[in-house]
Length: 137
Image (cartoon, rainbow, N blue to C red; front, side, top):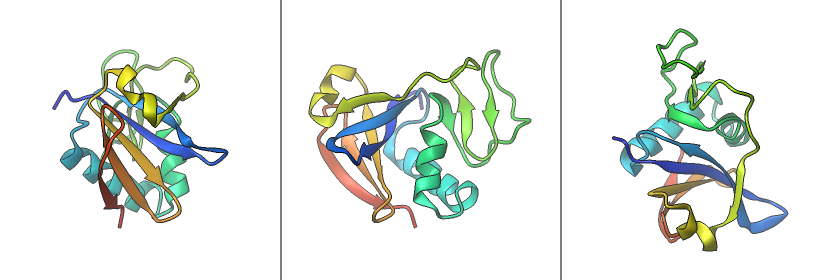
């Protein structure tokens, strides 16, 4: 369950580059795709751009549509209702930007790329290689 990952979206101006946020916990594909689907269906109301905006707002301890503003968290974390628990409660830093071809340098297990054009998520291994495409619906 402690699998780390990045959740991201392609930069429309540079299609080989992603804007990404770190997620510290529960990044294994089976669980993570389910979390993204839950956030997309409930919080984002099936609007993929709204999902992208929500998940790229912070680095995350974990994501989950069942998070409420009252969800218990560790000190210096902040629950965001319907999205997840932030990694810390400081002002968000800018998203991490990188080309998928350089993903191996990040030392991360998984990278999820959300595509608003077709409401899908492409799963990449830590070296940037795509291994599957999943529909959000």
